[in-house]
Length: 104
Image (cartoon, rainbow, N blue to C red; front, side, top):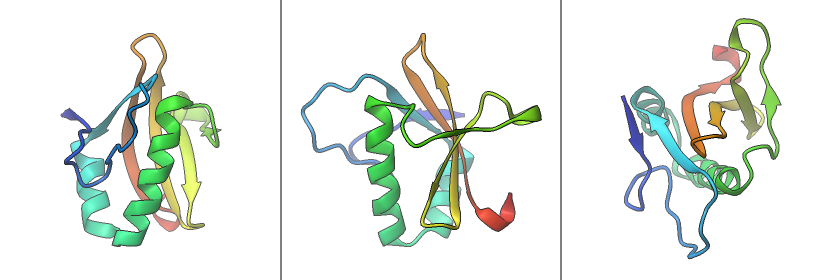
């Protein structure tokens, strides 16, 4: 099940009045993982990365290969990875996973 990120969500708080190009949604599983495994400073850094994605989802990303083709990865804080899909026609970014590097 997907839910759209809103101002009151733990992960994403938008303070800008600039219209964003892409809408961001996060899977329930990914949100639970973020809430369970991340410290407040890490959530803040993740929030900054997500803000960059909504205007340009092609920035700082790596395309996964093989059976994971079509999924993109962002690395941050050296040990954390966030996986997401970009749907250009719908202007949608779906965050599907948030994992430590050693869990992948």
